[in-house]
Structures are given as C-alpha cells and as structure tokens.
Image 1 (cartoon, rainbow, N blue to C red):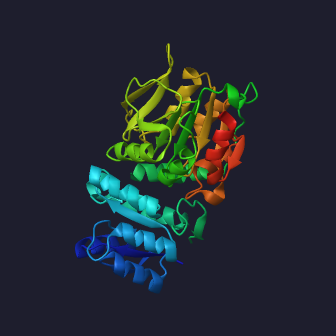
Image 2: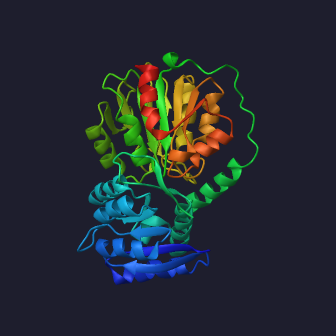
Image 3: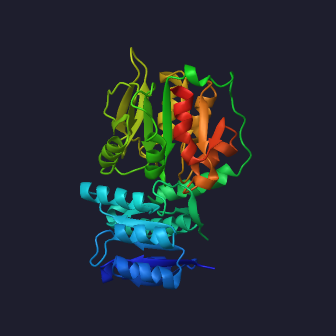
Length: 371
C-alpha cells in the first residue's frame, strides 16, 4: 500500500509542485489537498492520510492552529514547511510544540544543493515520517504516541545507512572500567534530532535552578532556529538555557545549546569550555552529537552522563561508544515515547545503554540522581 499524503498550502502552485514530486514516487500517493487549515481538518477526517504536509501562514485558519486541532482529534505525522527566518523559526517551534513531527525549508534552495536532491529529500522525509509516531496534543506536554503510522539528501542517506547499521550485531564496547557513579560525574550531554524540541522541553523543565551540573544540548536544527529555540527553553525552564558561544565555560545549572550549522566541541583547560567551529567538508550533521560527545572523552575524562533522545539515524552512537569506553554513564529514551526511534535504537542495539527511560521519567531521574 502506498503512503497516503494530504498536501496543505494556500498557494496552488506550491500544492501542485509538492504533489508532482511526491506522486513521482510509486510508494507515495497524494490523496488530496487543502488551501487552508480549516479545509485540512475536514480532509483529514474524510481521507485519513498517513502523512500531512502543512504550510504555516494561510488564510481562514493558519497551520499551527490546524496542527493543534488535527493532533487533538485525528493525530498523525505532520511535516511543516517553514521559512528559515527568525519569524519562521518561532512559528515552526510553535507548530512542533502543537504536535507537528518535523519540518523542511519551504525554499528548495535551502533544502538541498540542487533541485533533484531537494525532491529526493522530500520523498525520503515523507517515507521516514510515515513510520514515525505522532504525539497527541490532547494532553499538553504528553509524550505518549497517539497513533502508530503505516516511520539534506546526504543526511537522509546517512539516516538510512545508520538504520541498516543498527541492525548489525553490536561491536564490543572497549570499556576498561565500570560506569562512573552519578555523583562523580561532571556534566550532562544530551543529543537529539527529530522530535527533540518537545523532548528537550520535557527533560529540562523539571530541573531546579540549583541543578549542580552543566548541561550541553546538541539538537539537529538550522542556524536560524537555534537562537529562538534557546530563548524558548530559557523562558520555560528554571535553569538557564542559551545558545553556546565559542569560549563559553561550562557552569552548573546552565545548559548550552549547540548553534545550528556549526560544530560544538569541548576543550580542557583551567576550566572546561566549548569551541564553536565551522563543520569540516563532508560533515552531514551540523551540529553533530558524535563530535560533541567524542570531545568529552578528553575534555571531561569521560566523567559525563550521555543522554540520547528521539531522532532519525544514528548520530551519537560512536561518540557514546567512545565515552562508554572511559566509564561514562549512558541513558536512552525508550521506543514507546520516541517520535522516531532511530538514535536511541542505535545506541541501545550497540549495547551501550546503562538505563532506558520513557521520556516523562528522564527529567525526574536527573533530579533524583544529582540533586
């Protein structure tokens, strides 16, 4: 059975363009379209699509309101199209908080280097999201999956390869010591991708302002989005959250978010600090969980808690493997509460996890373990 898609946009040209791209894949069928959020809600009831693509700014009813209503009544994976601007970032984060699963740039030139790659990216993303779990908006902050759906082009290829790699027998973990007790750890590192914006909110909100460890956050996200995301997290959390700058020192009760499009690594000195640098040529994930985690082997001597949350692919697995080899503790989000069980699966199937938690339990477990 092909993946059934509903395309929602107030531009007839854009609706036709998206439909033409998706229909060129024999495994995808565009079953309908809508030109505003109100029509989208009706079409979802009538057509029961597996995936919905949704614009944000539309007449009659905007995309964010439509997402909220669809997720409350007939939850399913929704892919937002967004402009890579500050305003677009705020609106997209609102849509993700309302229950949308992922987003892509509306301008194809922002999506990939050429038209063919952008088309391939869109088709692959729809295929991936059709296997994802939609989060119901009926219970604010809920991470429980509401509906099991029927889960840059180079990044999509990496995600597919990672999924295949995760099914291979796990390589032995080169650990020379047991996990360091929680009370002896010096930092918490968290890596995530698809579904991460909402997951990070749920993990960080329970932490008190007096949380005794520094936190480093690595979320796959465009450069124009991370400043707005850091501000949003800071406004809703007791701890301080801000986008990391080159030279920032790790401090207790402060979470530093890796800037989009760049690489964050940790460096040892009189105080542990972050380095922000351009990504080496050929780097797929910007920022990369593997790069940040691997740097902590030397910078923090592995005395960290590494947490892997929802996300496509396997970014973070090799960094976690390196940390595990020097005694780090590793937690992963469980399959049932992940939007996409890719990154946590890669770590779990490699035999690297010390604990696997449902998303709502991770924040309280941090408080219990460190406070």
